Length: 448
Ligand SMILES: Cc1ncc(COP(=O)(O)O)c(C=O)c1O
Image (cartoon, rainbow, N blue to C red):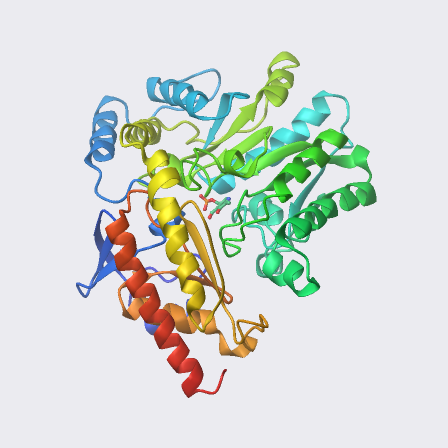
């Protein structure tokens, strides 16, 4: 009987019956399972292994720091050299408004910190009634009570009495499902979707709204790439009502979209940014919040103790690995590699997939990509929900040595930033093969 019987986002009953897939080792963009199968990891683990597997510089940084100082905390005005150095490097690679960082252990903890910090900010400004944080349906901001509440996943809210009070959600900027059927162009829909924020601010009462939070591109929701008009309009609305703008960069940060930060690609100047995953390329847990000048000034100058923090805030080994990781991204020019080379190349390859009978839409941004599997690609008709076409396709991916994730009818990828053009070619061969097999199933079973 395996000893691990409760794993994240898993049906425990099914796990007990079927067991788990065991991944034993990895190198570059490939994994090997316990049966010896080689698998192309087009999801970078869980959107995090940006520099790819097997990078010795990160291993050496961890080893050296474990020997020097394996742990000391950052409570009560204490710091360690790697945490100080990392704070400085983060200030260098983030937009100019960010000169301060609050470290956490994960993206969820980072977003818990966001909730505490924005409410503290408004309290210090003498506006304690500003508590409401507006987010979006189908957003993912983590799995702690605050993270899952900020997220807009119905299945998560249903378990545990969420969301917590004073968090409200507007509809997501998903053009294919919400704009296309109404005959709106992407850009027209982007403005419509952003104005849902203004409507909600007015409904709640502008004096009660503390912040708006969003992922520049929704990751776990299915790589929902918003129209170019969306984020600038969100920024305009936040500015108009003086509301803090929080960019959850847990997936989009550290080069994923072809810039260091998703907000740079999508066009906003956030007040706070959550990060995790790519900060260490997932080699060791670390997260945090970049605190912009507007918020930092109030927290520092108006002072008083911020009654919040984690044992592992600024963990020295995690910070040492993050330093090695970010320096490697800089040295290997991985952000430029995504922006100028493999990002545009992937976009071309995805555009070519539009000729496939199963593909209703194909889009990418940097190294994030999504395919919509449609029953009728011209009319945009979806498959019947009981068909679970995404899961059928995902099954073919696993069987053919490719990790691609299914979110409903959307097949999504986010490969390591080190991927080469030749490896993208290999990945596209696998993707096409899996689409063909899924299409053959759909025809044989009369789903189309
Ligand atoms: C945008 C976003 N925010 C927050 C999180 C939560 O991060 P963690 O799983 O490290 O708590 C995730 C995880 O996927 C994420 O995608």
